[in-house]
Image (cartoon, rainbow, N blue to C red; front, side, top):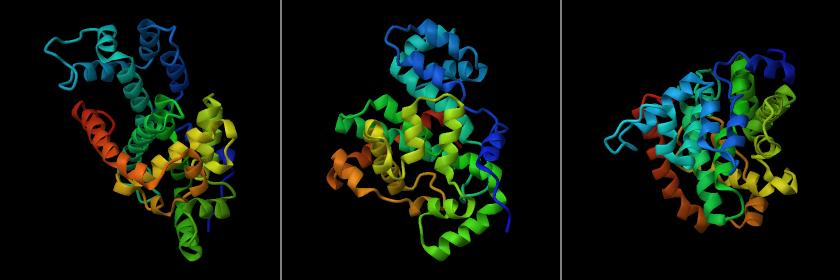
Length: 291
């Protein structure tokens, strides 16, 4: 049995994972500012050559082109429009990190990225349906909710067999087995990472409390509960779900407070599937981070 690593060491080791999404808070701030223009967005995107290139490729893909090719990033941003730029750039920046291949959780290559996109889209769809949180923020929150899992799998892969045995013996949610064995779980890791990267408190709350939204601060509880519900919608069709996914806790009081019923979930589920296929298909077409 391996000795658990300290939480801070796990977060330090995560710095070695390529493409950490440290640019994302700045990009979100500009994209959410009604007083900012495409020139401000362009300035940030140009600091990431890979993102600039893929944004230009997306604007010239069959999904958006009308025959005329965009030659500059400014033209591409204008063609895509603010909403598509937000969705794509946020997904691309986070997705490159989430798509790193690591052992643990029983993932196949690309699973975490695909599942995170599905949860992001489900969060956005639920946010629009319920009208209680900003849909763009909900999308980003859903996309990032599992960032701690990647860091934990990257740094503690040799301990997962012991965690797996503990979870099976006790029949508890996987997160609780992590907590018992390590002294912390992937939500603690994710929350620490996002605080270190200067993410807004709303997203830190989601990453820390999405399995148990009733424990989140009242101010952020609707957003956290939206992602919690979205997680279960995405689990329903199993895209990219690891071995831990089906042991996720269900916080029924939080869903009741948000007003999400079984009927609403069933209404939204086909939309999540369609949007997931559309978005993942678009990324696949231009050779991005899905597999």
